[in-house]
Amino acid sequence: MMPIVLLVLIVLLGAVGTVLYLASYFWGGLLLIVAVALHLWRVHLLKGADAVRELVRLSLRRATVPVFGITMAILVGGIVMVVSGYNPIWAYEALFYGGLVRNWHISVLNAAPLIFTALSVAFAFKAGLFNIGAEGQYYLGAMAAAGLSLYLPLPAVLAIPVIFLFAGVAGAAWNIVPAYLKMKTGAHEVITTMMLAHVARYLSPVFIRAFGGDPATSTHPYVTTRILDNTMLPRFRAFLPQANARLHVGILIAIAVALFVYYLLYKTSMGFEIRAVGQNKDAARAQGISVGKNIFRALLIAGFLAALAGFNQVNGLDHRLFENLQAGYGWNGISVALLAGGNPIAVVFTGLLWGTLDAGGQYMSRTTQTPGAIVEIVKGIILFLIVARYIYTAWSNWRNRRRSRAVNVATAAADAAAAGGGGSTPSGGSSGDRNGEG
View (cartoon, one colour):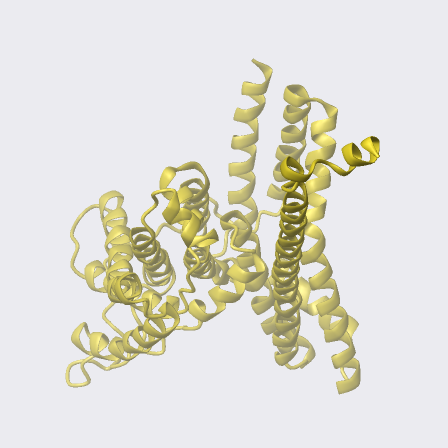
């Protein structure tokens, strides 16, 4: 009974603490700490103290590489600032204060679309694919959400889920051609999705012209008409009065989608098949798994996820589609997915990290006149160190497999030689027999 009660408390404290902390009620972090402590206690009750120690050890081990990468990037960035004549202590103080405290709401607003596009890239990674065109699917989602939100007369409780699904389906449909070409001809998804990303980018001005941005009738030719009020995502301020006026529940939807993607990948047969294809296509095919089908649906799901970033921006933040839409979320989503190692849960934290660096960098530039390029240097070094680790791991695995094959070949040759030597005993007798007779 006690483990069940603890589980309920962990879920409640985790959910409430997350909402409060994201809404800049920083004492919500205390609830998250209590939830973690209760989780460890629950593990202790169910599995014993050794299981708790093992869980802590594994968590620290997984955090070692990202923490090392971030620390090294900060040190190198500090050296660059010293050489350039800036004070790294003041700059980093402004960076972290701005990103984690003063402009925390901007960090959260930046993180939500990044989580969606990073989930898209990470999902494709699991199938052995590189959905580099998430930027285009993001644009398609934004256009689909804006177009439907201008005319949908349903109540908000119905309108928002309908728009959510419609935007996602539009992004999935945008990936049908790359998915089909990959499945049937082997055409590389990097090329096809990137080409369609540019097509989507240049379709947006045409869309804006058709939905309120006609210079002949509008004083704002670079933006669509404002969407209907019933299609806007709720704001945190509706139930947390001290929250920033721009904060909306899109970040909560992003976290929920990340949890769903994790469940889909690791708890369902579809996810198992997709991961099996990504690990080894030949082995998956030998087990009766359709490689083409799983490639096709992986790219469509990736398109669906990336398009939700567009829904988040239009229905949550901007309430219209701008021609100079704040783009780059699709490209930055690749970095966030790589930093998370393709893990959907880790994507939430790396998305928040990337959003924090962007928001803190703006505050740092404004208050200390330190160039924002320093932040890009820090982000680049973090990504380089993390990706270098994956490359080294892949190279080590390849080297170990090669050595293992060489050992197997040598062992097989030795066994064959021994078998060949022993093959003469029926006619000539064994050496021991001959020596004994002699």
